[in-house]
Image 1: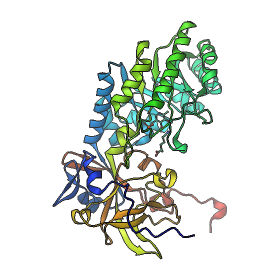
Image 2: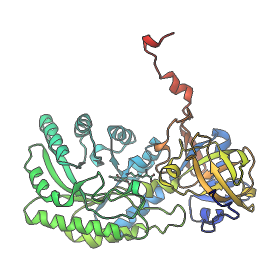
Image 3: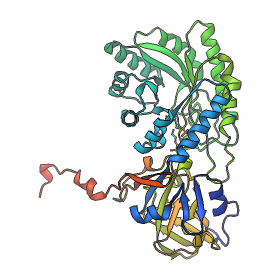
Image 4: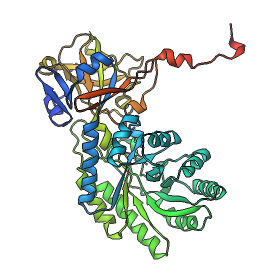
Length: 447
Ligand SMILES: Cc1ncc(COP(=O)(O)O)c(C=O)c1O
Ligand SMILES: N[C@@H](CCCC[NH3+])C(=O)O
């Protein structure tokens, strides 16, 4: 049976004004329309074209500082290691490097990016379930701060490489605490069925064996239970309580523990989620791990970068289907894949103050890619729009550009950084013809 005709937008959705009011880096002006810091976004859309990612340096700084202040305020000796995977643009990394951030990386590519941006390897933790030997060698050669090992096989590999290089690898065990983070199934990582980490019951004997290996300096334990965790800090609390119990056990057996890595995962409100403030996370860490007197690490990605970015797009056309209105944008799932991949909800607002204030009727907002999954929103309250009108996808600073592709031979969108009243293109649009120029034909296919 066909879905019923949406006669009214989803009343649970926040309206444009509420969305913008909740995002301090953005404001709506009668003349200039939607403004990021002091730069009208329509100016960027006109000068740079669309689709384009735009990041706010001010929001990145403000959020990094808020997180650090919450950890310091709880009396924790904490270091923040920004999860590079959320947004690895050099400009974003530089802003965070200047704030004193360390990094969390999952590949040599990310390590090269963070080092190029001024974050030393000695402030960087290497996570990931499938690090290759050459990546481990490179990271050790650069003096990596910590490697979070995820399996007994990997520990053997790290020890062999380090011993051959004549160094001691600083290794923490990533433990899987089997805690339900109550987030989307594709981004939960701390349940027993997930591929991540070492089973809780295996960790203690493994840590003892690790301490006896020639190439390894045991550092402590790490965990990361999932991403976009909202609705309280109970899951964090449960996971960290298990870590604390484990560390006490290690100590009782005479095994050294230097620090504990609490991972990332703090969620943000995209729609109406109640995301815990960083003070609540800091409180959960203090309540569970605080008594151990150890330095703690955090690996936040989304919380810092998500609200700092938008994706600008233009309306290509508005079309009427048999029972739905479609707004076809020039951004697509190849740019922002989160709605297609996780059914994620992103605020979508017009840049034009007149459209912003207009009466809204439900529309499906879609991209031009040849997949029905290329749908950003269904039954969303949107005004009538004309070709060339600009829209912004909110909270697109994390897991946006980094997850984009050239599917349908589409360009990789440009990236722009705004800082106060200035803006700059920090990665130009990459055109399909440039990518075509990189392709090669073997002789046997030559005409
Ligand atoms: C090991 C690790 N640390 C940190 C993060 C960052 O997560 P988030 O962006 O949710 O803070 C991730 C991604 O989920 C991760 O896998
Ligand atoms: N890519 C996911 C988050 C994954 C976090 C990485 N472990 C998202 O967009 O929500």
